[in-house]
Amino acid sequence: MAPSEVFARRRARLQQSLSGPALVVSGFARPRNFRGNRYPFRAESHFLYLVGRSLEGAVLALSPGRAVLYAEPPDPIEALWSGPMPSLDALAKDLGLEVRPIAELVVDGPVALLPPQDRETASWLEELVERPVDAGGAELAGADAALADAIIELRLRHDEAAVAELREATRVTGLAHQAGMRATRAGVRECVVRAAMEAEIIGSGMTTSYGSIVTVHGEVLHNERHDGWLTDGDLLLADVGAETPGGWAGDVTRTWPVSGRMSGSQRAVYEVVESAQSAAIAAVRPGASFRDVHRTAARGLVRGLCELGVLLGDPDDLFARGAAALFFPHGVGHLLGLDVHDMEDLGDRAGYAPGRKRSTSPGERYLRLDRTLEPGMCVTIEPGFYRIPFILDEPRELGELASAIDRRALEQLSDVRGIRIEDDILVTPSGAEVLTAAIPKTVPEIESAMRA
Ligand code: GLY
Ligand code: MN
Ligand code: MN
Image (spheres, rainbow, N blue to C red):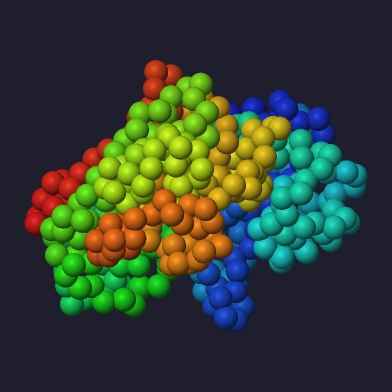
């Protein structure tokens, strides 16, 4: 965990851009099926960024000249079930921050808020500030919008402590992927591989940063079922990331053959995706537009599919007509930080530079990031190839691109349902650093890791 000065520095920077008081809440644990059986508590990311501790039901009150943490004092009855909690004095010493009992928090004027992520926290806040608070709401105005913009300005470019956390998250994410490759064999279910991957994460004292995707149906983009059986001849797609105790996320996808060896068709498509990914990674540098990085990947994919004979026509013309989205309907990546899609709780406010808006085109409507890259930003680069029946068997989705697909060539790729390759990239002053470079990725690397 980073030292308290890191959080003090972040708070001070935020305070410099405040023109009035603001509250940053940690939130409450969410019930799983009844109040006593709850999901593990994780504080809201803005709170973690500024305080560094997952304290339930706490509020950081900031104004230009003062920072106070309001927290629950230790409860002896609760200690029976959950163990002793630090006194507020001990917490204050530890955090280098004024700490007061939450019961002393009163709001007697306008105060800026960020949208909390659940209704319970929103209702609690509504009573405190005596105005409506929208849970998960991204429509912000006035002082709330200014607070969101100020915090985005801080969290967009990672400081040294954040980068150290991201390195830890991506290191353990790498261990998980290598364990997954070793655990893969025909005749077991996807959950066996998931368990091997999450064991590395849990055994490293971390949690997963999102619901693990470990599936032979990689064409279902966020497939969270794990009950499928692995059969020789299948490709297994694993999109699994570790989250550090401080809350920082890794987000990596690898796709590998259940048998340990890719077929000719699998290898051919895999190398098309890999080459599109390499081109996109090479385009990541300060000053680059992330939309152009996306287009680099999409263009590379179209070119590769033309070479395989799956797409018919001139690659540039096909790209211009939106052919990439037939096989790669999502964006090439997103911001990564304390959230796997960093600051997506604020809608597109963080991902899209002021004045930029989501496109409605099939190839770019799911692009989560449209900013000019700057040193300190961390992004994922994750192109894929998917045979999605909902697109490829639907004349309405295909439109005039239907005649650009060679069905016989596509049929020859029937043992490829979904391939995604995802790495985490830190933008540096001179270019980019692939934080996940050590995770096997080329076909020989993957096949050798699976033999290990
Ligand atoms: N793991 C979700 C994503 O890659 O965006
Ligand atoms: Mn991702
Ligand atoms: Mn992912």
